[in-house]
Each structure stands twice: as structure tokens, then as C-alpha cells.
Image (cartoon, rainbow, N blue to C red; front, side):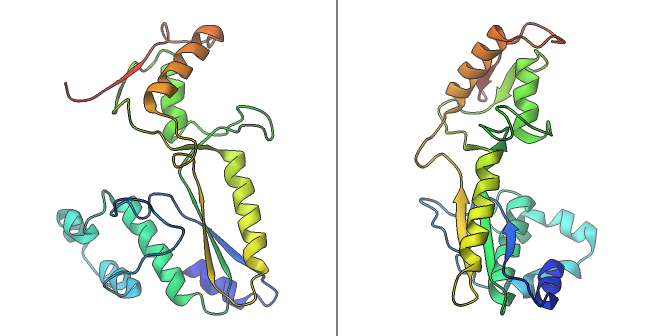
Length: 215
């Protein structure tokens, strides 16, 4: 909201791009459209209520407060989207929802990354022999998308939104599971195969890994 306030003061601003997440509607089931779904309550009202709460109260009542969302990350992303939709005013907003961002496919070079966070950390852990077991269902799709695909989506969506005749919020997904899904089992095979062919020179142990559930 502070960034939006600044954007409204920029006299020559053509568009504001907000990078959200593909999991902002993870409280819903079925096909998720490129739109912002309505809430039963005003998003600003909800945000203001939480800001006035005692931190301990928030911690003790987290599951009730996020009402149907799996965690605070997806819930706060959802609130941000809905607050932008309500208050964007005369500002054109491009809203991009990437899924799990991984290293690049092509630009600036194949496999480029600047972080070992999230999926990158798991991939490194398995390929270096530091991690062997991942808690996951092998049959599920791992919705990964290369970082250069996300960057290009941000640029294209921003340029497209800037040319809209009327100020509005344009939503665009940057993900893979709908048209080109990759299962966790397939990713495991790719990681194991690559690690054997191109072993990490500082491996902790022989690289191998598999996904498993509770059993």
C-alpha cells in the first residue's frame, strides 16, 4: 500500500507491476482463473484489524485469522491483491503470479541462479548428496517455472497493462502445471541423472534422492 501511495504521486507513471504468487488462491479448489476473486469482507478492514492485534494473539489464533488458507504467506499475498484492486484508483496495475521460480532456461545462460532458497535449496541438497529424502507425493505436479520466463512475463504484462485505455488491474500467471506439468518423480529422475553425469566437485556424499509420504 505504501508503494501504491508512492505510485499515485508519480506524475508520469505508466504502470505499477506487483509480483504476487500463483498460490494466492490456494484456499480455492479447481481451475484458478487470471482474476482476483471477491472476498466476503473488505480487505483494508481485515488488514487494519490485524495491525491492531497483539502479536501473541495473532500467533495463538493464526489458523482462525487466515480462514482457509494453508499459511500466512498465501493469506497475506491474497490480502495484498485485493487491497490493490480496491484502491489502485488512476494507476494501471500489472499483477504477475509466478509459481515456484527456479534457475534460468536460457537467459542470461542456462542454469543461472543467484539463490539457493526454496526449490533451489532442495535441488542443491539432493544433487550434492546433502539431502536424500523429501517429504512429498511423487505423483503430484511440481509447478516450477524458470526465472527468465518470469522476468519476461513481468516485462510483457507491464507493457500490455500500460497501454490499457482505462486504469485497471491485469492479472497474468507465470507457471507450468496446467499445460506442461512436471511431476516430483520426473524431477527426481532428472536430478539423479544430472548429478551422476555432472557430479558436484564438493559433494557431501554420493548423490541420490527420493520423495516419500508418511509410510
